[in-house]
Length: 305
Image 1 (cartoon, rainbow, N blue to C red):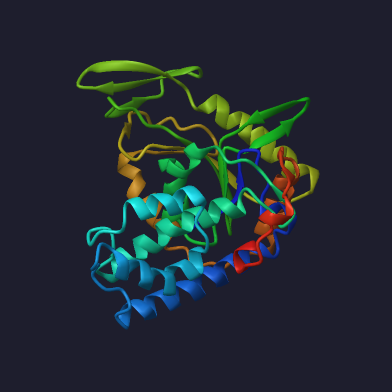
Image 2 (tube, rainbow, N blue to C red):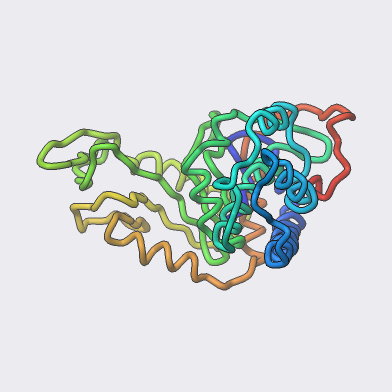
């Protein structure tokens, strides 16, 4: 599960100590998954009876120890709608997905709070399918900056997603279209999306990618960091109709997606010092908006790091 080190302009644990939190997250995640899996194999998850009462009891013993407190609104909602048999995992694979889904709020917490400060999360991020895709489908050793807002010359701008792996950075623009089967990169400014002979014009992602590349290059140069990067236009469901790919750029369409994705999933390299140095440098040039956390909001739990 990739680590969310920066989300838009929210404060992040990782920007306070990039050398502590990535390894701490990996250990916490591994330890608690092993505990949950062991409990599951021992039969602590039972079918719901008495309108969900037993599930709530067993969840209190196991899962809630990891995912901690729910908000008041979430707690009230769970009382109104107790877990049904269909909601609860019945296999290890379902348990794994259940666990990963439960990690999303945990990740968002680390990406919007420190021990002393907090940012106010836009609720739409909780249901953002692109964010969920990156967090749940890539290994722990990938560090994600999702829609970061950065300082470029005299302006603050939102740039493309940055996926920082042990061996390089991928600057990613996601391209999707409800009525698209093929992508025609026709010009610098606009591309055509086609389905059954009907074409729709969309803004070329290359302009935004080059702007993000400028930011990445400037930061790497400023700190004299030698770390490779590539620009990526990623479309899981459409094919690219062109072979003239720009320099340091990958067009990953339907035909290339499986091999590209499996390459990332198969990467066994641990977190690297150079990778963390690059992440630290990039984070220094991101905008952060936060306020001081009130004393009652400073919880004493492992999720606070």
